[in-house]
Image: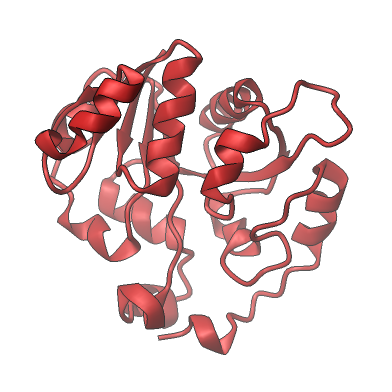
Amino acid sequence: MKIGIIGAGNIGGNLTRRLTALGHEVSVANSRGPETLRELAEETGASAVRAEEAAKGAEVVVVTIPLKAIPDLPSGLLDGVAEDAAVIDTGNYYPQQRDGRIAAIEDEGLTESRWTEQHLGHPVVKAFNGTYAQDILDRPRPAGAPDRMALPVAGDDEAAKAKVRTLIDELGFDTVDAGGIDDSWRQQPDTPVYGLQAGAEAVKKALTEASPERPEAFRG
């Protein structure tokens, strides 16, 4: 499958490593230009490209950059994606630590991913936002293994969500349907499921225990 990864930080880099190892055709981009990704490209066999090239023809696009950088992405970034492409958003809102105050999230109550998809002009599937980057490398397990981790996945497009869940299964993790994008607050920072290294039943329980009240530390 052709996969574009926009963002080569901890999550983006380790997804590049795993997905190329599984045989996918991966293009990876960051904000500093493809020449800064030479080592990752040589290590993995991925193609280092500019952001606007990473999505071209991609069946899955992973957007894994700081939330504050979303509006700075090239316009029409996703215009060239494959038909029925799934766009994964791994983002989190850290107003005090990194992103500054975003009024649409704070005042209008938009979830991070709803805000992100409005900027991208394309539906997104929320996944990997509460996953430790090292777990992507260290914690894959075969289906049915008693210690297999599960990841919550939220999205409105059921076909796109199914595609993402299949890909995560291939990566070695179970998934739990966390509802639509307006429900994705259940997996934002400082909720019970955020960073949870557990199986599907524990993830389901944690999602039900989440509070819609954003903690003070995560308000702008």
